View 1 (tube, helix red, strand yellow):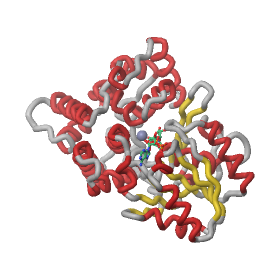
View 2 (view 1 turned 90 degrees about the vertical axis):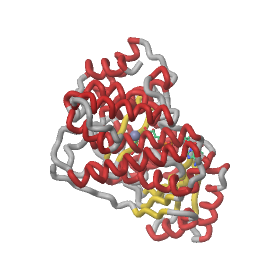
View 3 (view 1 turned 180 degrees about the vertical axis):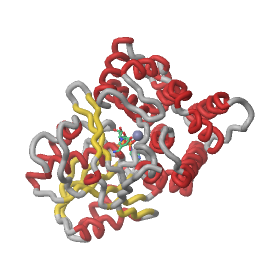
View 4 (view 1 turned 60 degrees about the vertical axis):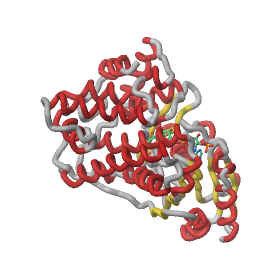
Length: 392
Ligand code: NZQ
Ligand code: ZN
């Protein structure tokens, strides 16, 4: 087991009606002026924003609002948020939504507490030294940003999608009411389940160390997500299934399922970020479209983990060679994607990149990773290009 530093400062307030506690939770932080940040309107339509305003009003906390965050959140709105917070002297950021809104809040938080252009952090040319406090009312189980140290922003010019990780952006609290996720379109629920699984898979497919307990947690999480994603396909209002998936979204990306590994693989995420940047697709669907190709490409360099995954997560029987068992595990995961209407290649994702675009994506992906990425197998630009070609 490798050394690790497990840092989860986020207070989780989980269950029915928990959004009514938001005013009190903000008050307890000592902050007094909130920027409520949200997306394209689902939170207004469902009445959630109204309940949040009432909860803040009840505690005498004033607020301003900035909506309009889109999936693959844009840097231009981050700049607007920073200006608004400065004008209004806001001292707390409340994200009402999913990963996109939370990540936009985190970026605004960096912009409010550090000099210079916030995009520098996403280009990794310097480190942030602070972040304004962020609280979350989560409406979609997916990105795990409600507990993660990560923020992913897309620069409008050139649609460059980049992530920045720093523990100082982890939210102060995350309010998670599974009922709020019941208004999600089936496609977003499936994208979310795919992303949740992938956050643990990225940590699981490594070539580092013995992690008996961490692996057992990871495998239980993956089995739970698969089982409940299938339930939600048939019964979108099943509270218990919503609750399991929501809790998994946080645990899958707060570091728990990677304790003791070598840092994880994350190549599939790197590959998806370029697809998401270039074609503006939903993150989870982009991951599903490229994972099978990545898995087949790296399989022989990470055989024991692929076999373990096939047996312990996908329930593949013991008969056959190691490679046959591993390939059956990959195939079973792709069957699961199909069952929840996720793509298994780029055509099914609805994008048809040219050979030139594939080369650009592979080049950008390797640049963003500083040359190479991966633990299951180290991938260089030519490997990334080959995987994109396999995923067409
Ligand atoms: O904008 P609204 O109208 O709210 O609609 C959203 C959006 O269209 C909708 N939605 C959310 N909750 C809803 C709802 N619709 C109906 N009812 C509800 N209760 O869902 C759509 C997707 O929302 P978004 O926030 O984009 O989803 P997600 O949580 O999947 O976030 C995706 C973003 O997070 C990044 C992704 O790259 C992508 O930009 N990631 C962030 C990570 C992190 N910070 O730790 C890690 C991830 O790997 C990921 O890269
Ligand atoms: Zn993700």
